[in-house]
Image (cartoon, rainbow, N blue to C red; front, side):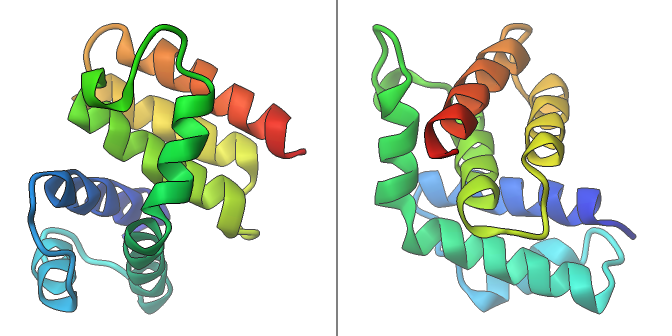
Length: 133
């Protein structure tokens, strides 16, 4: 259907990874069956899931830089999954404008997070963008 659908599936897979679920091709195929994705969106899905998995230390380091009085283990796991996905897009996906990545992360946070998640995620991602420019 759309990149937005692929992004949402990616976030769900990244969330499951936090709880020990293997992020392998079988899980990606299984999860992507929930929606109809184009070939380009499937490529995106594989890229971001594997990219987050392979760069998780760097992604988490970027989150930690901007946490004020918090640690990663205190974050809601869904918020962390959304942050990892969006920061991966910001750092590694030149086809996704930073503003789009942030907006999509905020929308995911509104849908899956707490009432404060979207503003928290927006603030962290804005700081990451400022830092990497």
